[in-house]
Amino acid sequence: MSDLVVVEGLGHRYGSRVALESVSFVVRAGEFFGLLGPNGGGKTTLFRILTTLLPSSAGKATICGHDALRYRDEVRRRIGVVFQSPSLDLYLSARENLRHAGRLYGLSGRTLETRLESLLDRFGLADRADDLVRALSGGMRRRVEIAKGMLHEPSLLILDEPSTGLDPSARRELWSVLEGLRDRTGVTILLTTHFLEEAEHCDRLAILDRGRLVACGSPAELKARVGGDCIRVDCERPDELARSVSSRLGIEATVVDGQLRVETRDGPALVGRLMSEFGGEVRAITLGKPTLEDVFIHETGHRFELADVVNAVGEKP
Image (cartoon, rainbow, N blue to C red; front, side, top):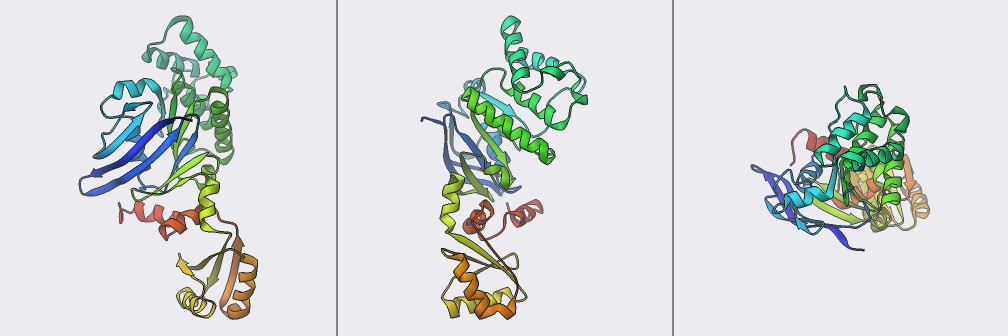
């Protein structure tokens, strides 16, 4: 499997603020690849660089064999882009939106009409093709956006937070559409998301936090880094309990967002020991297999949602 996207030491600054710092990863042809991170983690900046909208301050991004900075036109011919902000004309029908977009790609005549009808059918829009976009649901509008990005048959489809603003049902439907698109056409899909449950659908992930790449791999590989089980303990004095657990049981325990957290190979046995030794201090205890949230905590030392809040208020780049 060849590498369709190669990112090497990519960095970018907005004045003194670091948005990306030495980010490197590859996306393989035919892969469903996710850029996962909280708001402010660097996803949008990376998206803009990969779609040739923003030059990087350092490093290099190669897409379909072309430098994204030096050969922007060549890259643009090979990628389809779906922006987070809507780009459809609400007062045109779905068919008219696609027809006008196709002409911008240089398509016309039978070629354009054949592709247009094929995409309307593929995305389940044929029976609503002549309805004004303003009358379509959020999920259907997003499907029109994706169809528009596929008109010129790109090798790589790049989407920025495609499910933002959709209800849970429309979000699940969108992922089904994207997975079916990749399976039927072989197009490589790269998207940004801050939804942990969505990232589970990706073949591989690059996890970003405050402009840095903190982990990269399949969801299963990333969760395997954490270990067998994760235990969370709700108690009144988590810092004191962490020190006691460390000294009396010889187990490393950390405090994350006011809760004691322990990674262990044998969760059930350790839960028993914790309750036996410290039951009087425990308000609640939770045992579970590692999730992508646990991966994020393991790599960064803080929760995903907390990172979102910190970045949103501008305390960290």
